[in-house]
Structures are given as structure tokens and as C-alpha cells.
Picture (cartoon, rainbow, N blue to C red):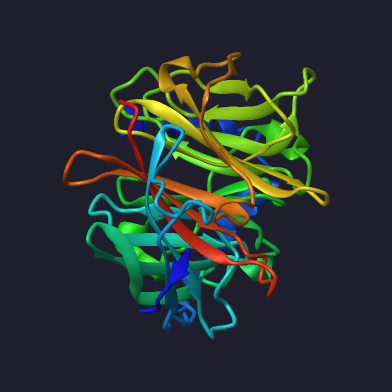
Length: 359
């Protein structure tokens, strides 16, 4: 029920080396970008003005995940902690496609599929989300300091954090852009990284939807993990990529029940979580979260794992597209999910939180 109102060092060196290797075969547009930056710096051109907009976000509290049984808390391996239905009069608000919640569990950065940043803070009451404060939006900037949308790079769908840097996946452009967010914040300029040439063969609107950064200390050595929405291999499984690290290459995820992959995240305990979405005109939308041991990721692997939760429109979901994981102060592993309303009056922008309780 709804009531109230109120998500490349040891390992960087590996990643840098891999990016340098890939750049030898990278698209020529990267060279052009580098040249343009050099010319701009030599000319002493001032950085273009940026536009940050503070906005008010109204939040209606979602008490129960299952409206038919609002007091039920556990759903599969997850326990519902609370949720919010969000809205704003700002025309840029909506279309949330990915989110990163910081370790404090409150501050977050999200991206919209129109190349906008959303930064804010989750307010809690009795351990449950109760509102959003300090919300600011700004356009993502390219290497030239101009909005990414001017380059046709607007379908921003994936987000991952690594030591203060944010990686953003641009689906239709088949590109990944790195922002030095710790230094520049919302004014940071996105620098394209070299990606595998096979990115270019992904479907136009089913490209990279999921990014995560593997731990530096593990066998993947800080590799950037990228998974497509529905870029299928010869066996009909979803293609994924390991960029940088010690084991660069491709893997795949077993596709089941016509679900598409829309985001991913790593847990503190070493699991790789995949957020999946199903849609049909007859039955509507559904979501599922699957879990795979991170140790299973390696070139050539076909990943499979059990579902932690599966839910359809009989529950408080919409077009769930973003997922972030953090460890709460009490030791719980918390999953934060957000939905993409496609800027439609018929859909909702939701923020949901669950605790992983099967460990």
C-alpha cells in the first residue's frame, strides 16, 4: 500500500594496460576526441558553463511490497525494507536507469536515460526510506565540456563506481565513458574508454545495460564487468565482457524465460547479482534478481544462478532498471532498486529497498 508524502591501479595498472591494448583497435573517434582536447587546451579555451538544477522530489511512502498482503515482509531471499513513489515538477526528472548508493546508505547518484545526473540523499525513518533530500540534476558532460546529448549519446543506461570514478554505459552508442566524479562532481567531463571491438556488433537498443567493477584483490583484478541487455551469442545467451584486469575476454549469461538483463551489482560477500526484466503486452512487466558467485566469472563462462526474487505487477514494481548494493551499519546487505518510468504518465518512478536475508 502507498501512504503519505513527506546504481582500471596492482589493478589500475592492469586496466590501464588493457585499455592501451584495446585502443590499438579502437574506433577512430577516440583519436579525434584526444586531438580535440589537445587543441582546446592549447588555445586556453574556458570550460563551457554547466547547469545544475536543485529540485524538490515528492515521495509517497510504500509500506508493503505486496498490496494484497501489506504486512508480509519476506519475498524469496529478500526482506522488504520499504519504498518510495517519486515525482517532481522538473521536466528532466524521470527515466532513472541506474543508481549508485554510497556506503553510508543515504547519498546516491543516479543516471537517467536522457544523459542527466541525479544526485541526492535518502531520508530514513525507522530504517525505511521516507523521502529524498538535497536533490540536484545536471546534464552529463562530454570531453569537450558540452552535454553528451549533443554528441547523440543520450541513452545512458549503466553505472558503476570505482575509487571515486564513475563509469557510464551508453547503450545505443556502444560506448563506456569514465567520469572523475570525486574531483569534478556533476561538472566532471566524461572520457570514453577503449572497449572491445565486438561492442559494435551489439543490437542498437539492446546493448550495455550493466556495469560493475570487480574487486582489486580477486582473480579479476579490478576488471570492468559489462553485460548487454539482449546481445545474444550463437547459443542464445546474453553476452558479457571483462574489460581490463588479468582475464579480459567475453562470457555469457544463460537467458531464461525471455527476461532481459537491465542492471547488475556486486555484494560485499562476493556475489554477482543480475537484475532482469520481462515485458509483454499481454502480461505486463515483471522483474527478477539472480545470483551468481563472482568466482564463476571468467572468459568463456556461461553464468547461471538461482532467483532471489521474482515479482510481477501484483507487487509494487514498475519498469525496474537500476540496482545498487551496500552494507548497512548493522551488517545487513541492502539492495536499492529504481524504476524507469519512460517519462510516461502511465508509469511510476519507484525506489525500493530490500535486505538479503538468506545468509
